[in-house]
Image (cartoon, rainbow, N blue to C red; front, side, top):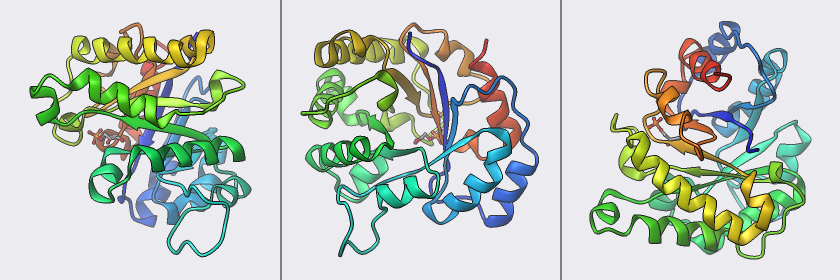
Length: 248
Ligand code: 13P
C-alpha cells in the first residue's frame, strides 16, 4: 500500500528567526518518518539540526544532475546526503516555468538522486490554459513518462510523485477532490505500466492550495497519498494539523 506523506515546500520563504520559531513550536503525533520539509537550501543544515527531535526529514527544493565540479549555484546530491538530507523536489512547476527546466533535464536529476540515495519528489501538473484546452491528461502523463525514462527502482520508497495543477498553486483555488482524483487515477495507471506491481505502491501526493480545511477530503481519495504544501506549511500549527490528517 502506498504510504501517506505530508511535505512542506517552503519555497524562498522563512527568515532564520521564523525557522527557529517553527521548530520550537512544532508538536507532532504519530510521526512515521512521513512528515518532510524542504526549506530554502541555505537553511537545510539548520532545519536538519532543529528538526531532529521531531523526526521531520529535510530535503532540498532542487538538486543538480551532476556529481560535482564547475556548476556554479547548483545543489549537490552527495553533499545534501552527507549533511543528513533525505529528499529533493525535482521539476517543480516554478522551476519549469522560471528556469526553463525540461523533462529531459528533470529525468537526469531523478536518475542522479536515486543513484546517490536521495528520494526525488517528481512534480508534474498542467497550466490553466492546458486544462481549458482539454490537455490535462496528455500533459501530466507525458511529464510523468519523460521524467521517468530509464528509471529503475528497487522499492517504492525510492520515488514520490506529486501532482500539482499550476492553476491551483498559491491561488487559493484547490482542485476539487474529484478533479484531483481523476488525474491521480491516471497517474497510478501509468506508474503501473512503467513499474509493474511496484507502481501500485508509489505515493502520489496532491499539491495546490492544500490547507487544514480541505486536506481530509483530498486524502480520502483512493490514489491521493498525501500533500505537497506551500503556504499552509509555513506555520507550525497549520503544518501539524496537516500532518495529523495523515493518520485519520
Ligand atoms: P501552495 O500550497 O501555496 O498552493 O503551494 C503548492 C506548492 O507549490 C507546493 O510545492
